[in-house]
Length: 512
Image (tube, rainbow, N blue to C red; front, top):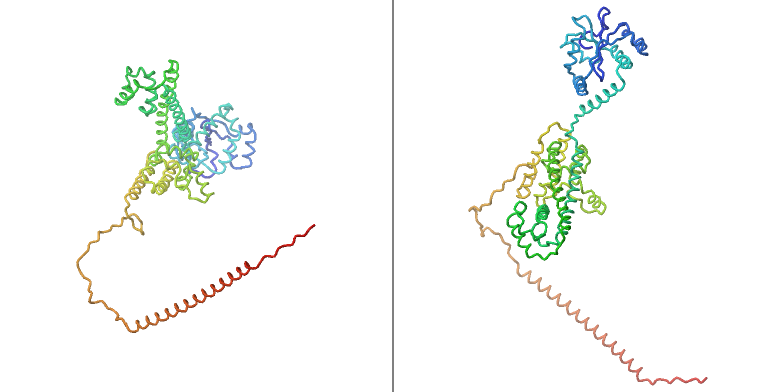
């Protein structure tokens, strides 16, 4: 019931039906009002297009100009609002002066139409069955081309799905994943090209490698100077600082490098052009990545930086996947090999992964890096969930999280004490010990026990006498053992001498 009449419509009044299609608003006129009384007859009436045309006829059709208008109308219906185009359409083509009623599918929409357009509306089970019948024969009733109808349905369904999911092209994290992957590849290529330029030109001017350390400056200098003999006449003030330029020109006059042809210089300069171009493109790509990260994940970027945040998103696969990960996973993300190796060998697990490159972890001392990375991972997990699932487009929780991590870092480096119990946020204040004059040590108050020298001395004498007896017995036993040993040794020697004195018997030779 939409607040007007819940009963079946009066036969004397005309009945109009509002149907919201993907292509526009359709207003039908119901010819046979008695069909609504019996549901079974209503289903039979819409079995064929011919029977449906006898019951209901198209009175007016408001076609949408484009998908944007269709999305606006559908969104208004979903949110329980009355679209302005629908209100204008009903005021022109709808029942007037209360002489008719309007059948609608949604009771909330019927209430809005009644309030703003002063049109009596009806919404009940019979109207729902009527709408189902109209939908089954909509092609014959509207006479729209098949291609146009399919285009409207497909476009509106996609647009409405994006609207429901609050989809925005600025929130696509795929661009971040591709950009950070390209940035890493560019760094590798730039490093390879720059080393090739240094090695190639180093045969001609080896001293320049130690004077000009920056790769971009080196490439621009080779591009501007060419052969080293032109260094004195070439103005390098736009490329190099004044002191480095002076040192370079002095080294060019006494260089020990080999002579090279003009064709070689041309090829080296072409490689220098590639280094300069790639360096400029890398700077542009980094700015693009920075802007994208600030738009998609502002809290994450504020906590760990644009590059580390982009690498975390790329490693997780998406911003939603990273938001689903707990803080313990975020902490060691990127150190999976070390983690599984530690678990296999039963060693200590890693304390940080990609988050190690964050500026807050880099500021900490080596012994505090594990604690700071753990706390930063917890704040990063909260910031990622806010960016992925929240509606705010600016930095909110990231500011508070970074402030807390910085405060914790100062506490660890300053060595400040905290309460062992309670909330743990209030500091323990220790006052300096000051010696105060007061009670002194009273030696007269000591209580001592008097010694009994006689009993102790007697005990000592007894102990001394018994120890002397023991020593004497041991000595006598030792002397006896020594005499027995000597006696045995003498007997052995005597036996040996007796054997030696006996003449040896000659063996008889047996003749064969």
